[in-house]
Image (cartoon, rainbow over all chains, first blue to last red; front, side, top):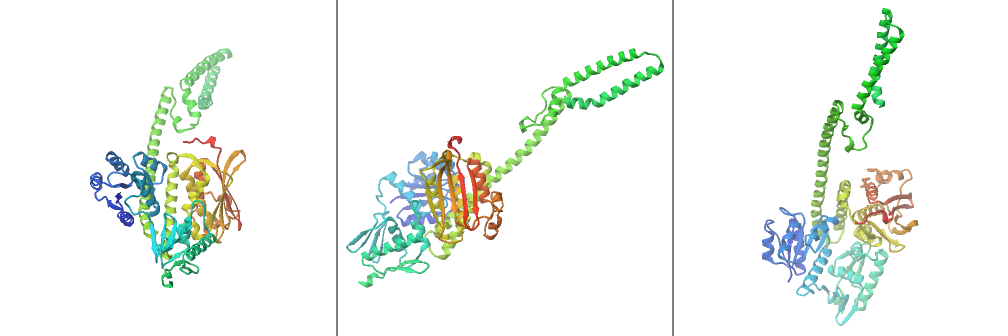
Length: 233
Length: 333
């Protein structure tokens, strides 16, 4: 299990980060006394450090240099400063990457994962392989496949994203806005009509697994994945 | 020289009067002939001329100094010659300059402190913002969407404060590099995806070819964000597009055009849209217009060496063009 050390003075942010990281199976520890960051670091011996820039006593750059003196573990800065020079400063002080506040969980998670992968090889030892199961249907987000019983079908990236969101909230309404936001891609924007097309495709894939009315439309609002297919059999 | 002569004019007048009186007195006394008087007059005039010449020479730089206007603060010092007048003028100017500099320094210091404070404060505000952002991130539904919207507005407001405070210290804070226009536009539009989705207005990117420009990524992104926010805000109908078109003008100058299909700006308002605090007709009918957005856009583009122009037709839409200079003229760091 990977250990992540959080050096950040905002308790709210620390609590949220810890919760989220625990969900992905990481062990975390946050700094309590900002005078003794080094000692706490040594005692915990983490695999990765999340480090804020503005801290009581000394700033993040200082602690970054201190940690670099004793360890080569990945250090990720977490800062509100978005200037190019701030990022350069961070990297020059020994950081590996930089996340600007406010950030998304997904971005933070992706950067943490990529640093861990680079430093310690594959995902070994953590349950990062994400798969979701609802009513006997399993979605493998990494491999883009959907399985039910013996049948397995491939999905496109966008279809997987839509199903991911719907399955996470199975039984609950997912708004169109939220789906649009989730599948918005840097490469191609998705407008309303495209979303309709994608939803139709998802319906077809579900039908191929024998699920006919699992995906319900809530008029003018969004969609709901209702796991009612088990009773059908 | 002119100043010197003008200043000595009373002396010359007194001298001539004196000469006349003295000659008159001698004539009335009946003692002397015209020749003697003339001789005396020539002699004493020579003396006067010699005095004036000596006086002018010794104070020449003082007079020159008085006649010239300083072009910058640094050459407002005193004359270099050492004569009593020149010396005292130099002392006076030096003293004044010092007082002035002290004053200026204390104001500059105050301003710097203020900018520093604003910087700290804005960054301080971003942490609670991130906390709220993280709390609502996995939530869906009307109240959370509304909080998300307000959060975006707060973030945008903070950025505007930050960037306008930084504008004065621009020189310390920019970094010019080659940027790929398509990539930049995509990253900015994708950052504003919530804004687009919420308003049901979608971006369309049309790039003629792979265009790269020399600019500062952060400042240019801020400019684009401002323009996008305006474009979306003034597009009232849903299902419209905002078109980002990149092309090369004559002479290979890259141009980025941002065209919306919104309400447009009345002709009367157009010349003033780049003025600070100018909100115009649209600003009054649409909420939360500070009149700062386009002003900042103009200022930042000016500093980056880009030219920004705007054209608009009411009911049809607005087009903002950013013309990038020939890259040779910008030093690339």
